[in-house]
Amino acid sequence: MKKYIIFCTASLLLLLGCQKLEEYNENPNELVFVSTGALLNYTMNQLAQGGENLRLTNLYCQYFSENQSTNASRYQISSFGVNFKLYYHSILNLQEIIRLCMEEPEKHQANGDAANQIAQARILKAWLFQNLTDTWGDIPYSEVIGDQLAPAYDTQEFIYHDLLRELEEAVAQIRPDVPGPVGLASNSDFLYLYNMENWQKFANSLTLRIAIRMADRDWPSAKAAIEKAFSGGVFSNNYENAVYYFNPSPDNSNPSSPFAGYFPWSGYSAYCISKPLMDAMKALDDPRIPRYAAPALNTGLYEGKRYGLPSSENYADDWKNYSTLSETAAAPAGQVLFLDYAEVCFTLAEAIERGAAIPGSAAEWYHKGIRASQEAWWVDAADIDAYLARPDVNYDTAPGTWKEKIGKQKWLALFLQGGQAWSEWRRLDFGILQPPPGLDFIPTRLIYPNTEQLVNKQSYEEAVSRLPGGDKLTSKVWWDVY
Image (cartoon, rainbow, N blue to C red):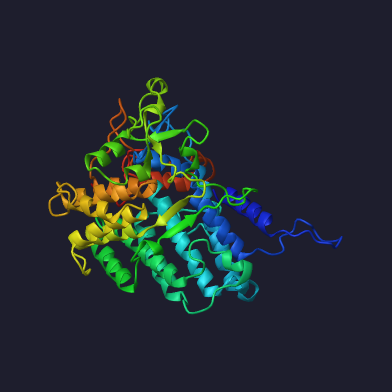
């Protein structure tokens, strides 16, 4: 695996950093200078694009239904390696930022304080590694950086605990009072424009996500991490969200939002809103419906398409009878969330139910989470109040256990964040999702890429031996206890 990572990373660095030299006796393709700011921007753009993993996870959590072949939503995917490579490629780019800022800080001070740049890279690496391990389970982690060509797979348990350490150290090294870069370099941080206090809140909020996900396995460690992260400062409003904004450019250097193709701009959309999502929202008269979805072209009604039909049936089912993604949600100049305030609120509600010492009640944080999501989608205050007053929404009267109440509303609020929604469904078991017709399962992980069996066979086999059930879609990752 490391061979193709090294190749891809070297290719990228050459692309970003090469300068044509005038001297005859010097190689015009030799790497001369790599901008840490360019690496940061490039990596964040790649992560926001999401690629294959973004498509699959938004299908697996049943936000979308396919309009032609249903191979993906019926779990008939031949290769699962696209984002495995992309994510590790991005991890090494972030590690290069760390190396450059540690070894030659004076050369990269135009892109900001070295300690702050290192912290940014560490936080994004933690975000990346959690996405990787939540998707596959045990993964290469501690031996990825270095000369090991066949890195061992670390257990998800080890990775989770180490990510908490990484984030705690990253928060501690941030220097929020140090001025950021000026001029063109000030555009290097597309998330926060070098507002390092918000980077600290992002890291602490990410700690909440990691800690709550491991709660069924190690609640004492999770509880301690949640309480410390909260006291250190987490998101307190939507203006602090970790969000990447797309602003398409003519040369495609900053391309359109990855969701732009989900709206029928040219008379066709590859996806419709799924029936499970639309039915759940319609049952609650959810005011986010017109924010999430567009009316069906044939009827003008909001309708979800059946999920995972066999392809022969799906081709015959006119997609124009169903809602697509709304024009707002699918705008080319749209956004992709890395983490938001609504998720923080729902996590704190759950943490309180589990016994964490957090101010407020589970009901208060649950209601804050719903309000934060609704406000982020520009729902009017009166409509939000009416929604929260519904007996089937209000925390005190909504049906189900606290896991079902929080899980359902968190799933609705995580719309378009497919990986997180899929993980929350696996962890909280709140229902709603149903297997495709003729199948009796929903994936609980992805199968390792085929390339791993070729280039890292021993490590791969050791990892598979630890998986209950083997390398299958139905095996469970470490934190998925129930």
